[in-house]
Image 1: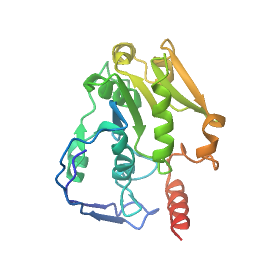
Image 2 (image 1 turned 135 degrees about the vertical axis):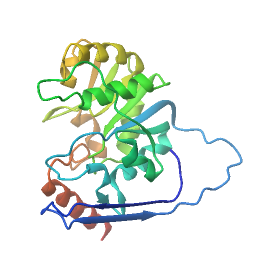
Image 3 (image 1 turned 120 degrees about the vertical axis):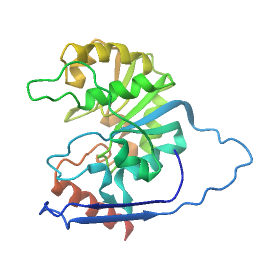
Image 4 (image 1 turned 30 degrees about the vertical axis):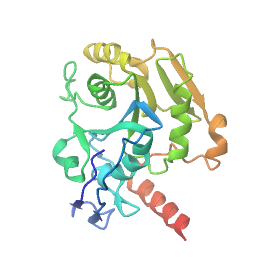
Length: 248
């Protein structure tokens, strides 16, 4: 991940559920390194999907201020020490100013009756199609409770997995946007998109998937929060209050 000064300013006066403005500033000096740093999982690339419309939230989820910085940057900083690279998948004009490496969503298949082509499945396909590593961590940009410890645990499972996908499963169901995919999954997923498939679990049902469940990681996530996402303003406020309580 590129490290440089960034300043982002986001304002949406039409959204009554927010104050209308979130400003984030962060400066990190680039320090010379005598030798290349060995990553914990240097054969894994990470991709953060950030191309969604965020219609319920009212503004781009990745740019929401969280802990003094945009949420997408906080997620990138959390995972960066573990993997070979971190890339955002979404509008380049929205995220390159943060110093992130960005690729745009690619168009696969035909548009539906409403003209929609994009979605999480297209984001996954775009990531895998551009990847140069065998394993690829796919994350949504609206996961405020992610921890490096949990991500480390998940990636460790891939080192002993014979599957094509390592995917968490909670009481709410499968979690394809916090999972690890082999690059070889790109071809069947793209083929599914061309057939008109839009749901991730439908596109991956024929792939070898190893599911990991909440009891397996309870020791590092006793509150059961790590995979909670933010769909609406009240989810965002709850996450901010949780973070504030932790810092007291």
